[in-house]
Amino acid sequence: MLDKMLNPEVAKRLRGKLIFEIDGYLDDTRELYVIPEVREWMAVLDCAFPYWFYFMNVGPQSTLSFVVRSLCRYEGVPGDSVIPPDELQRFIIAHFAAMNVLASKLGDSQQDVDAQSREIGRFFAPDDT
Image (cartoon, rainbow, N blue to C red; front, side, top):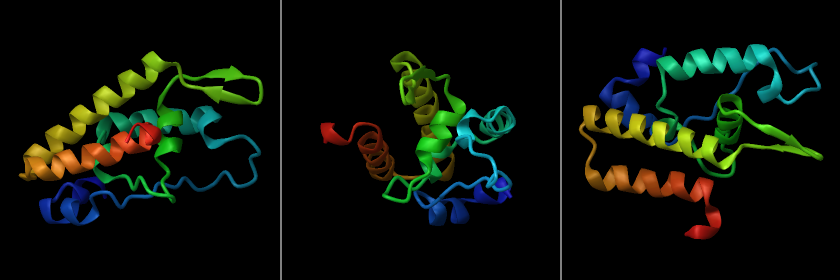
């Protein structure tokens, strides 16, 4: 399935539209990103397919937050958890690089890459734009 997404015509059609879901944990009260099996599976998936920034929807229905929380180390704080800034920076840099490599392979224009980068940037820092 993932290989099919890398076909240039398919990839361009799906750019910015992916909403990610994991099934089978509806009865588990924990957040998906804290479940060890989910985190392990996501890590394996990320190694094989690190193109989240190319494909993920970053609008109101976005599931990119789940992906980030599943793949990053986080620290518990009262009532929540946070990703340390250096960990988030590592994630963002690595995944922008993967997006840029894929966009180059697909022959995307620099304008398209810049537009996608701005969308991702707004997702992570909505008040900065």
